Length: 218
Ligand code: E4P
Image 1 (cartoon, rainbow, N blue to C red):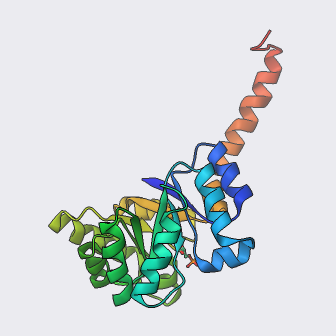
Image 2 (image 1 turned 120 degrees about the horizontal axis):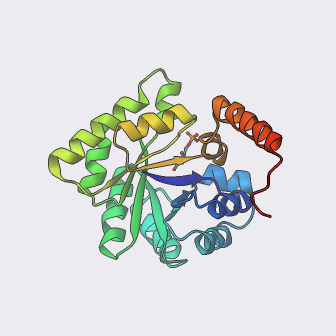
């Protein structure tokens, strides 16, 4: 499973990248507004830090404007994935941009039928929003299982990018469900490493090692 950071904060992206934990980055207009700064410059900077795909979302609602904006975003760097919403104009823009060679991430997916449409439009990624479905008492993870089964039935190559991930449990559950990618806030990525028994075990090992009075580097 690939790990993407769901953020537009440069410092956090740089830090995670240095740990070798980043396969890509996703942004959305809300994350860009929260991070501040010039959108196009931010996308360019993220693309210079991370080798993998960097999703940058169009702001237009109609297809022709989305296509124009998508071309501007795709021209920033070869690793930009243009993000379009799961609407009819978004699907049209997806098909055109894909034909021009751009990677496209179709976002705001909340149903298996929407995911089917995105795959038929040739999307590189489909982004089902797990957390937002859970928020309204639906089962976000069930959607990942359904999309996996449908895509496998028809050999669709569109990658399932589990989005709106809120916890470490979401990550392991999405991996079990067969998601290709999980995009998550940096705090969730960092949290994946934590286990109280790891901390306790390490504390004991360090204390016992100190009793030996030895050094490894002499
Ligand atoms: C990713 O591409 C999405 O924009 C993001 O995961 C949404 O997450 P949220 O539901 O926590 O805002």
